[in-house]
Structures are given as structure tokens and as C-alpha cells.
Image (cartoon, rainbow, N blue to C red; front, side, top):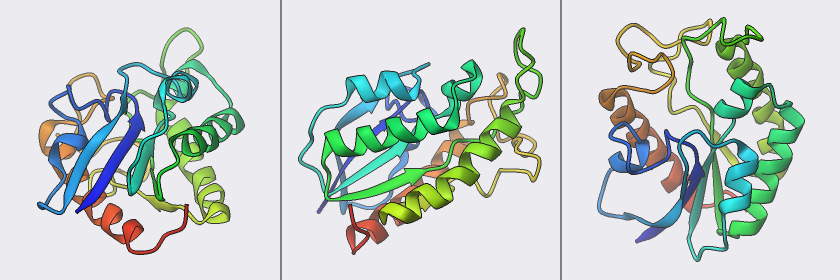
Length: 184
């Protein structure tokens, strides 16, 4: 049995019907606890996590930071702090989901482009630490960083339940790979 903990925002919050945490596959994975806060920035998640006795930690943060214009280096620092505090044996970092919002708010933030840049930065960041990076959204991510037709909820930010189901299956595979040897 592989125990799994998580740290993230609404897409990670198991109370939400579209959350990947609801769709882990197989009887060999068991969620033990975690933090999933709707609307949370990486700093809010960092402040909410605690040590967890788990084999694998899955972190998926950054969407709300991008929405608020938080810098990518701050997000990376918060991810590192989350991993350190939780203390799981192995780490999976999930890329942020696509976004259909390309002109968001008074500051006209392109959340699709911001997510693309954040995810690109995660590649080097995770490799340098021996963490496993996975894009559970690749089946529905278009090249411009938006969702494929029908893959997002009406808000353009959250996945549909079907998309969350697919992401859960992909993350299940990543968790098994990490538990088999990716370093923390």
C-alpha cells in the first residue's frame, strides 16, 4: 500500500467533484490526509501544511498565484517549503492546469501564458531536486495553454469531472513511479 498526501488549491481539494484526488486508480494507493484549499496561493498552502507520514507527496500549486501576479520564484520557494514541511519520502509535482482566461481582471493577466511559463520553470526546478514532474493535463492542454474544447468547466479554470478523472489516473501512475524510486 502506497500512502499519498497532497498540497494544492481547488483542483486538489477532495471536496470538489472535479478534483483529481477523488480519482486515484487502484487499491494500492491510499490518501492519508493533505491540504486542498480552494482559491489558495502557494503561500497559503505552505502556511497550512504540516508533517505527514506518507510515502508520496503530490504538490500542485501556482494557478492562484498566476491569477494574482505572484512571481514564479516565489512560487518555487513556496513549493520547496511545502515539500520540506510535509516530509514525505517521495515527491510528485503536478503542472498547473490549463486556463481559458487570457485577459483576466484589471491587470489583463494571461493565465494560460502564465501557466505555460510556470510549468516550464518547474521542469528545471524539479529535476534539480530529484522530484518527479508530471503534466496530468496533457490530454486536454492545447499548445496555447488553454483547455481543449469541452475539457473545462464553464469558468474556464477548473476541469470537468471527466478531465479530473483523467488527471487522477495519470497522477496515479506518477505516484507509483515516484514510490518506486524518485528521491525526496
